[in-house]
Image 1 (tube, rainbow, N blue to C red):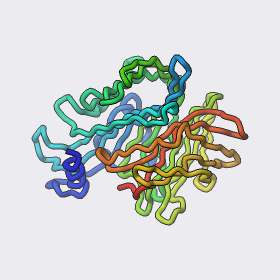
Image 2 (cartoon, rainbow, N blue to C red):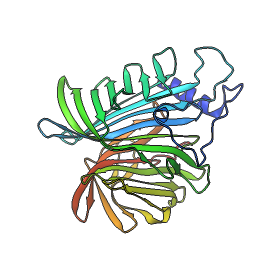
Image 3 (cartoon, helix red, strand yellow):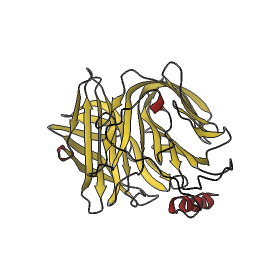
Length: 356
């Protein structure tokens, strides 16, 4: 079954099943994001994701990191085909739980074609379903995540406590030097989380904070780029910090971005040349042999930050769904030797260059 999905994806993205290939919308500056419409799906764009990461705590004070992500990908299937079985859109989902007490990352993944009210990403507001995995924005503005994986069950409510954070130029976020190398991108930082986690036959009540990214575009990265390092962090003083670099094939930086919004809502955006990543410690995966800079120092302007992982092994092998292996993990944010917040670090393209 796994080989079948990999082959099917390859055919879609190579155009091997195309009669009338779709034309996807470009990303351009000047578009004003509109809500609640832009909470929902954008099927006219090729790639989209709703990405939730955060820190949880059990009633006993035990820390956990978690990720819930839904991807929507438009295929190159024949747009003139009237069949309800035509796989025009694929929905993918990942779930992961980092537990430093055991040193284990529990994770699962799913992929299905959209259809028959069983798998969908709907327009108008956030409403995504992949069988019994659900992510929906409810009437009061809170999000509900319900995941029933084979080794993990999550039921979480995520309530906004701050306004949306529009990345880049009011939601137009550059990913490269060319105007079209961009996405539409907003974040919802400092989400308040409450819910339950069921694993190993036991249910635990949890509370915590989370970060939501919603992003849509035509391509993942520009030509010549191989992967990225991204951080989204909820800082203890109410600030929100996001930073990323896109790496090129020479080991240099293809593009970089950082934004810091303080508790009053004042936003500082840093130019690419003001953003620098300095790896300090590496971890090598025994499963894939990929090596990741799990402890990193980052400079944005005059501010220096350090990332300390909750645990080293937070690698996800998602080759059965998106064809990639990546590191996605909970990190503590340190400044001038003191913890100042918590966030998530994502690193892609360390095993092999990611596909565009």
